[in-house]
Image (cartoon, rainbow, N blue to C red; front, side, top):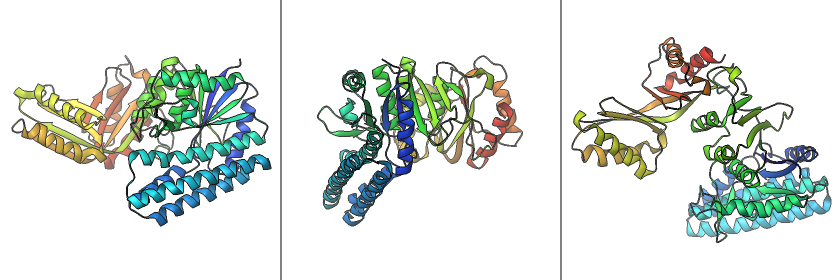
Length: 464
């Protein structure tokens, strides 16, 4: 049996019939030297359109919801006409598109009558994007003579709990089913073409895997089949050392480690989600990020080893949409203060981006996604300030967080000094600093107005 790889194509790569034809050509070429499992995202902005239909249905606006569905049908029928040459196969795909969008229209119409869209229904609505795009990719491949087999995520074997919106795969059941179903097709010389993002419970109720779910589908399949590599085809040449819109000298990272990739994902690196990386890391499966529109580019490889030639740091990333909360209390009750603050975060299910505590434990600062600020403030006021009988809570919403990431920082003296010297040289005040024991990441907080200048200064000091 030849080497097995999993190739996943993102929404931009599948954004039109012409692009789907290009993708099918890449797959056909790749099959000459390897066995492939193909995973597909929804076309272009289809998922956003589906969520707009769901939102309209929740308001009882059946007219808008059905109009969106009909636009989706028209777009996919057009793409089918452009991508699928074989007339018989094209008719089969067209029937599928019409049937599924008629089913979708019934779902949003029913939801409009109730003026209610549950999380379960929202997952069902969201699932249609991947089903439609993947069927068209299947048709394009069949037209090229590829023995492709269409599988929805749960047909491939991905079984989850009922955490609708971001469901969790049930392992090892999922791995066993994928080996039996997808592995069985590979053994027959067929090419499984699998919907990304969607799965189902044991009872067959459709679920979705959350943000980055198609990438997660790809690494779950690779993990289950002991595949050698996962290729994530997208619209960029690879992971960048910084946001090129902010840093003109940002460059493609040719090789980074799993741990560096996890840190970058945590700080919102485009196209990376932490749980996508974990199955690959556990089995040492390489992840390659490739550009569908520039396939000659080497892209970025994520694996055990990193590229030491790039120096001590690999990337300088930032996120704007955060707030910093500082809780101050009695120095004699510092330990209780920290425990109470962390307990509030756990109860609310909020994962902080950064945490910093004073030596005396009499104050603790946390950096959070801005959208949960009010929720956490209410929890802290009730469970910490009121219950402890005093204290202060400061809230800063006009801040941004910066992360300097790289395995080369481990055991290298003077890295922090260089970071903060670069920031200080621009007259920027640092509001908070954090570094984990792994020494993979130095994070700090500045005023939002200063964040781009800070990123450019640090990037220039270490990378370019």
